[in-house]
Length: 193
Image 1 (cartoon, rainbow, N blue to C red):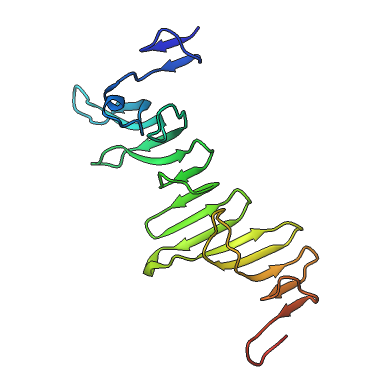
Image 2: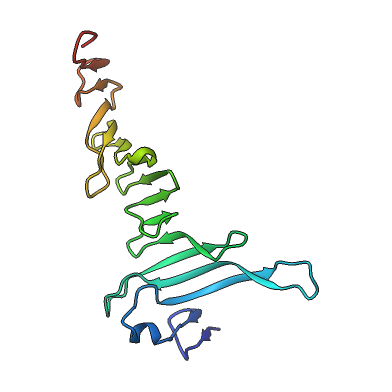
């Protein structure tokens, strides 16, 4: 059997509808949606008081009328604070941890760093200390090579300033994208080549 909350029929076994029209009437559609609060007793007093510890919600992702893009949010509550969104799955499938705007793939943002796994399988990471804006990248490429890079990202989240290339045959290039020997590198003055 199906359960309908605040609606006479829906398209699922459990269907919850928030039909509060106040946000639509005010012209704000972003974050309009429904959620489930997960609560329990949080004091040893009698009678014990209940508290919402977490929330799962589905909300409209943008303010464009008739655009059905939505996101799923997971929330938790630190002691003494309000519910805070911790994880977001965007309408395009990007997953953000610690961010409401996951850039691509999986995006983890902490107070001093950001690490992303892009749609191409690249792992890029950045330390926010001292206003650093470039990323380190470990990136598998077409043809089986692996590149280690440092620099800014392009619109796909790819760092293209390759510093080290490891070919599928084991040859390593430092500053060279197609090494011709076991280790092939460039040095600006003296050293090896």
